[in-house]
Amino acid sequence: MNPQMVELVMVLMGLFAISTLIWAVQTFVLLPRQWQQVRDRVRQGLRSVEEVRAGLTDPLWLQHIRKLSTGSLVVAIVLVFFLHLDVDFTLFLVVATVLSGMLWGLDILLLRGIRRQAAAEIAQALGDQGGLEALSVEPALVEYGHSFFPVLAVVLVFRSFIAEPFTIPSGSMLPTLQIGDYILVSKFSYGLRNPLNGSLWLPLGHPHRGDVMVFRYPENPHIDFIKRVVGLPGDDIVYNEGDLFINGQRLERRLLLQNPQIDPWEQYYDENLTGVHHIIRVEVGRFIAGHHWEAKVPAGHYFMMGDNRDNSRDSRFWGFLDDHFIVGKAVLIWMHKDEGLHLPTWSRDAMLNHQQHLDKKDVYIAPQD
Image (cartoon, rainbow, N blue to C red):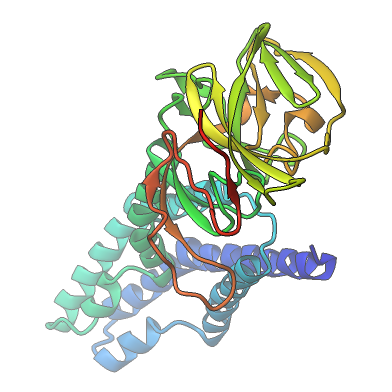
């Protein structure tokens, strides 16, 4: 992450906040006074439609504030997107939804009645609709809130409580998930949660052993991780020279592929995770977390592992996953796109329930018993 770019984004967001605050003061404090001044002049005998419209024209400084507000926000979003900066999008979405809703609501409570009353009085005094058109429309800031709030609210509810798309950035879940896979995550499979801190609001289910689960990385909650649930609360996990034991039961695994045929360095197994079959990849003779280790999963926690067993930063390194870090259950691959200028493909589209993908090119297929 480039510190200078992060600092630039923070400066842009500061400019956005300050300019938007000034814009809001003008909209909800100064603008009603502007309407009142025009109405007073009409009461005093002003009958020129042009002068009425001139009195309702936004000052030049406000036009510059608008450009600064929208421009700084757009540039900041573009930088975050293209530089892949760590930003809590859920927090951003919640704040944007609340602010846009407040703008719309404040207009309904404070401005709409005054605006319509002033418009009707001016129109009656002028004998036409000359002043009505300029007064009856929503101020620009309110119009933004009115336009964006319904869209943001629908997106927030959908991605917080129904489903959310994710992209696979690493190979820790090979061969089940490949870099560039686009997956859909069910947000209600494990219950409805507070979108900001993950606390459980309404229990609708719980993780099962073998589920592919998205969660917030405990060492940096702004980052989303995806691994497979291996250990449930209360489970005893033992690893010994490549063999995995859960509650004293050794997990069965059947060799599917190895590369090369003689003296292989990588192997693919069909692992039976106490009833859930899935494929794992191992590198022969490599034990990234040691030759032997044991762990007991505490209450309210889970033990997570990647299917690419020897290339996965998981619970073997950062410990157990606390329940409140859970994001949802990965259920579907809906698209794949390789890095760079490549078109998306849909050849890998499939449900993740017992999902298995193997590249059999130049890989030995072991004889089956």
